[in-house]
Length: 599
Image (cartoon, rainbow, N blue to C red):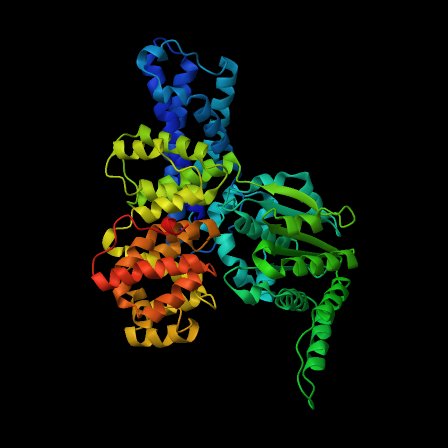
């Protein structure tokens, strides 16, 4: 994912939208004689609004550069109002970008005179409020100008102090959330009911790349904002890369710890249990999931309401059913607990949560079109400012917005990858060609990323993929990052500890940190590695593997290939025979040889 977007970046996204609308209105007015005065007035107002918003963005950015604190959950009502109006006009006038002048003469203005005047008045009102905000001397004053009265007085400083250690888990999720995205969830009556009603239960499910974990940060933020002596919040993020987060005892222990930090009696309960496990005389014991379930249920009764939010149930892999059953038992055991799960819509989860007796309400998560538009416009402005995106034809800005919004299929991750790709375009025509041939989904997007890797670096890509996909035990991100900073000899020792000796020759694996492509690959696919993608990537890189086989001992290759291909003896023997011939002849990579030939 791209760098976390700040409030200034969110405001900057409105500049992009204003530019697109202004250019379209200008093109229409120049092509149509005697255009209504209201349309020209609207165009001028959009231009003035764009200038005001641009100044506001610079003011906000300047204060953020000075590390002046601000509330990331802040709702920018006037900015949102402008974005709604401009987005509506942009959609209505999209056809002006592609229509030749002759056809523009025949196109009708999509609004009545009365509606045009209303849009003009609304934009003018929002612009006046933004101009007032420009007089602010600090980010705090800026937020006071734009916030509602109740938001100004709200603070969660005490809560952040109480749960400082556990809050670090959710920080990245909150940072990745764009300030004005995900508001569709806030408006849902079902979500409001969950916030206000102890004992209510939600299951938010969605496809990969839809922003579930980022949305979890927003939900946790709403829960924390309601925390008090009588309202507690606990949360947990399961991670497929970290087996510790997949264990039921780890999940329950983290929830119990968070509740204990928010109530003195709850703390005493947990302390007593700890003493039971660690007597002064005798052997220490390990926490038991049944005991922790009882403790959490008893703790919850000390509060009027307890929010428990667990993200990534599907990432628990083999322990998913055990985790879901235990958490459902906690939800049913205490009327004070408001439980929320976030996960993919998988069978083993759905079977439990669709039971009418458990009473979980399902909300399908998908990035709404407004959220995607907001994200795209803000990202375009951010990348233009940081020189990561450049084009000569200003109308291309609108084409990028329309193309990515329409092709996103409700996936933020897909949009981020396409923006990265557009940054490599050397001309406006290349950008347009890229927009005309956008990949349909994330797996195809990742394959295109792999295909543009230079030939000289492909061997390192293959090594990186092998370590990610086949290392046993799996390499966690922290170890991989650490390995890249080690010297060659030190790294060989490290890999010897975490990868079986017969799995990957150490002298070959030790080259992992040499190219920057390793970190590039990790950044691109770490968020989401699917089995199908790994298989296709392995097929793509197998030729590169054959080109490096002379570095392997034959026994090492046999063990490695058996690991990769499984127990199919025929495939393994065929592969080894091909390798033996290749080594004997000392030739370059066999032409046309790929993993597909083994099937």
